[in-house]
Length: 381
Image (tube, rainbow, N blue to C red):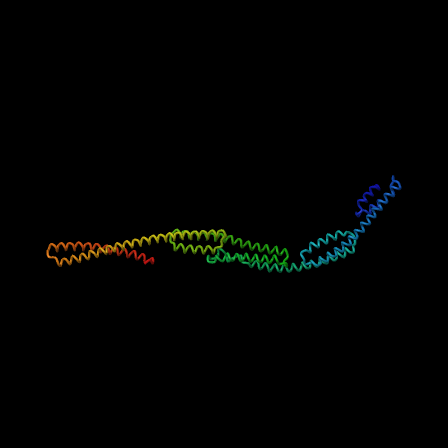
């Protein structure tokens, strides 16, 4: 390779490990170079010496940098040693390894001291992790027992439970969900548990929550059908027209629906439907009450009329009876047979009217008594 070419390559590789080998080639090449004057060769050699000076300065700076880096790494090991039990240890250990590699081949004795110390710190870390894994495993077993003891069967709900127990299903499921949530929060905040154990326990909690959700969905289905049955029974009772029975049925239905574990929207819908039935029942009661008021008014009006008619009849009866008495008195004073016969005719005619009026008064009295009995039954009289 030509001297000029070697000089150019040396210029480019002042900081390269191959610089020393290239200098040997340069010295050989300049001794053997032909076609150059002595002055040109001396100029080449001056440039070569400048490059060597530059190389030496770079090596000196690099040595200082390495020594400074060794001091920094020593301080870094102090920090890493203090965080053996910390979560940031792996990141800081990787940082040390990266910076250590950058030291290159300089200061091998000091590098050995740093690396030996780093390995000792790692041994402390492994001992800590081993102890923590043992503790984490023990805690995991405790949490597993706590999780698996959460009630997810609910006494066979809803299929194997008596209707009277249905109101307890929802509270039991809510209690189980709340308990699983509380356990999960404890696990998440427990710093003694390691990540693998936490993930395993969270998976177990999720499987238990899935059981609760499946039971709840089935309960929604079973209780939804029951709510529909109850509502239809109440509607049928309303259609029969017995307000007292319908009210009792509706009150019972509403109470049972409130006990059922239904989806929020379904429960609100059935409560609203039963409230509509209550509204219809109130309307019918109002209508029936108005019918009673109308009937009562008619009964009172009829009673007043019958009493008035009866009073008139009694007044007429009294006049006829007085007339009969007066005619009988005339008989005692009569002097002719013709007059006696005429008076007897008047008496007979009056007695016939008397009997007719008596029958009317009796009939009116019976009708009045019937109306009064009806009104007494309703507490009016």
